[in-house]
Image (cartoon, rainbow, N blue to C red; front, side, top):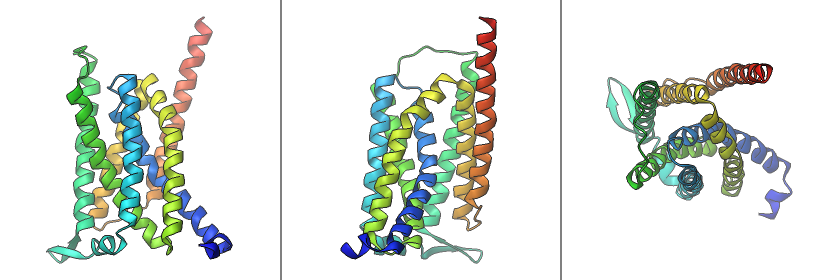
Length: 241
């Protein structure tokens, strides 16, 4: 442990891996922001806290079973000369879930313009939100940790990077969720991002890797355009006053 603290290579690995974990955590934060948006503020805050706590727990638990995790990358099913590991199957299932959930939410947002039921979210709604958070946390955690294993050799470095990344996710989750709640158009954009991320997960499961740089560039570019739209709308309101 002392050797790691005095090793420039270890610090470089920690910085690199932390940056990667933060980037991968963007998916988690977007999903949390969208999925809790229909809950009352108090329940939404609790759901975000539970979701991020589970993200940290799942990542550390997965790091503690490295040998088992590495085994998940071995093919267990072969279809037309393509081998699918448990990791591939989980990514495909998680990606399809994300696509289905985002599509359902987009449909709900569009229909809500004409059919607002005004119902109050129940305890069962909160429970279902937590179940969905658990499912997606598992998928994102698996993808994140297997990536971390390929980048660092020391368990201490991986755990430290995961903890730092989750802390940053926790700090950013509330502002992101608040912004999405205050600007309905950004929620639709976030849902579109989830569809995009789901497609990338399914593609990874079928061993067709879409470089994450392309995806995050598209997300960043679209978010920047939306930020200008929000700013322009705010300036128009101020001009009217």
